[in-house]
Figure 1 (cartoon, each protein chain N blue to C red):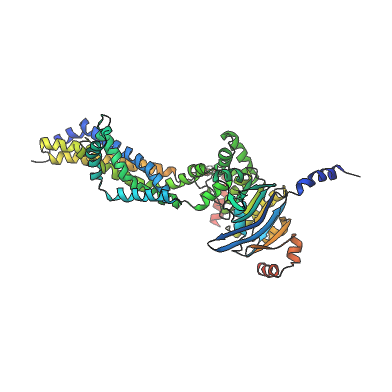
Figure 2 (cartoon, rainbow over the protein chains, first blue to last red; figure 1 turned 120 degrees about the horizontal axis):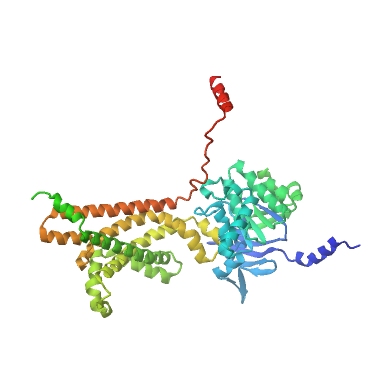
Length: 269
Length: 251
């Protein structure tokens, strides 16, 4: 007996083979120092992947390349089956113009370790600016949409505050709202709680867990094992520019396969 | 010859001084605008990755930083019209020559102010704006520039005051700005003290007004929501509350 659910699942099967975001053979060097050494990574729609790894392992660099903020030396980035960021011509990688990259970046949301809120704009204006400037939305409508998004991250009462008047946790929640309001296909988090005082980590993780539960596709570079356990579908260990191990949280934390994962976890726990 | 308050007051309200002050301020404003626009592009050029942009910017700054403003004004008014006949036309007044000349000199200094202001903006700002999908022009206009302006404001205010004073150099090209006005009067009457005191007062007034405007503008760049977050404390306390609080104090 075929249930409607299964039928729908079958229909979705063809898209499930196309990851929302996929990087292949990603290479990146800074002045002779190879930070990414051929990274293979893919995430499906609605998945949440946590990326762990020691500092300097290249995990943040991978995120920046995925967000098209820096050009890859080699390899490809595919968003929903379409190559973005660059094309290959005669075996050479040719990067798109900054203007073209700007358009492609709209589908990828990015949250930074140091929030990077615009200090000259209020919390609301920080969320509005993407809607008006990038999406061309009318200002009055943008304010409504932005306010709803601030409400979602629990900051409806802080809309008129400037970043300097907000706590780190509140700033990061505004930053999440700012990225989220543009309806990205995937959200990238670059150590979103690393710059926060310990007592402020919880409120940011809560927003992220709600987001995960709502079906957002998320790649989260983090040191928060708690978040990886609770919210991630898959946990990845990144070390020395390559992916060492990928597994569901239970297997990853309870039964790691690789020596390096075991070593890393022994430091974290 | 003692200081004659009568002459002093007469001159203080002499429209010629007001006109002179107006010319001084106008030359300063116009040259600051010219200097800011040229300085902005010089700053972009000097920090560019492209050598063909860096080279000319460096040369320009090197050249105009070396020349005395007085020499530039003399060249603008006397030498250039000999070389470029178009500048012999009526529209090329001492006022235009002074504003452009001072603007060219000042742009070399504004370039440095703008360059350091732009580089003072945290690189995460540009990164965040680009990540949102903003195009390069928007990133500059809506994110980087507003923050750079805040840094550039205090030194630019200094430069503006400097330009007010530099405008007195334009007397050599027969612009009747503030100091020239005083000088003309002195040449006729020899009342140095009275006429120069009037000039002092005018300069003080001009610079005071500029300083006031500057601090007003700088307040706009504080980026705080004064007044928004102020919660007014309840003024009326219920008698019960007073009773309890006094009880607590007594205990």
